[in-house]
Image (cartoon, rainbow over all chains, first blue to last red; front, side, top):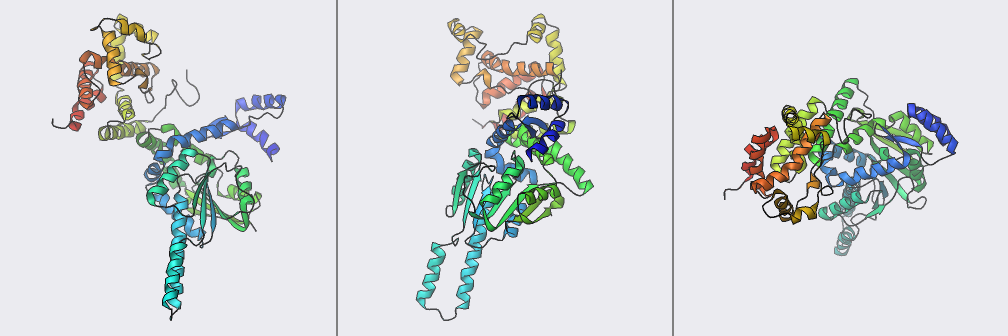
Length: 311
Length: 180
């Protein structure tokens, strides 16, 4: 797959690209293939470093910027993702690029409320309960509020995880939650460990998306589900123009005013345009081995949820 | 000379008129709400200074020392200052008092923000120079770096340079002063 992509990358690199590809073949298979960082052309190592710096810089203001840029709508998108996932108690979730924990906290809330409903239903259907049975069920609720569900938040960026852990402490999340530093292209987990794999607004920052998808396939149990929430292509031409105007004129200004960082948010809006559209990404997910791959557009395609199963 | 992307100098971020207007409004609001956001004061200066900076540059050009500064583009930085030499100067000299000001208030000329939104590289230097001599103004006026001291320096700079950011700072800064 890499061999087929190389000449395309050389052409995309522009006038310098042709010279570079000649130099590259002269050097043999050198390590510095080129890729994009927003609208810039950079080497693959550089992209990883630059992305790391972006998220290191924005970590503390990440949540407030999300609210400002999307006018709070990102919360709805994440709620829809959880609704689609519909996890039952006992689910093991791996949230990659999970940084500040938005998906993880929603998962915990969801399974907790499902669990509570389960216990309540059980009580309702037992008409002649002894006091002992009633006490036992309350014990169960107290001891296993999540019903053995667990979420592992994995992120390559230590600053983002730091913010996430602080948030967890402030909001009172402790059980069923763990934080791991890791690279989506090379996850520090064994094969077939998780029931669900999510990656929300993270995969477009990965240098080799195909590797991340392969890793997702590897760590999922058979029957496991892959879910990706990511910015995508807007299908409505009028909205697309307004969206572009908003993205390029307003968002970097917000970044400068709120976070004191224009460039990181300029990268963000550029990287959205570099990410493959819905159908192309669907094909990439299928290439990794997932079946029943489908996507759902939210807000006219500003965001899409892609889903696939390991069967 | 521009590199790819229309950048006129290192650190330059080209902006549309709409973006400049939004930056000016946003930075004014944040600078007043949170005076510790020095970067917002800097952005306000750059986005509102477009009419005044050419005047400052012309004044410099018409003065022999000023035009020499425009040509040689000296930068005031700890690495370019002869700190020990300044320390040996007699008390009451500008150099000695400047060093005393830096040490007493625990500030350094290296923390001045570089220009980003000025669309002319000579004017970017002019505003950079204004920022770097700011501490010298403090020294001349004998003002510390608290809110009151900064407002006094802003009044002085407003009259000296006519920069809208200084005028705004001088006019609205006192709002943040408590009645003591």
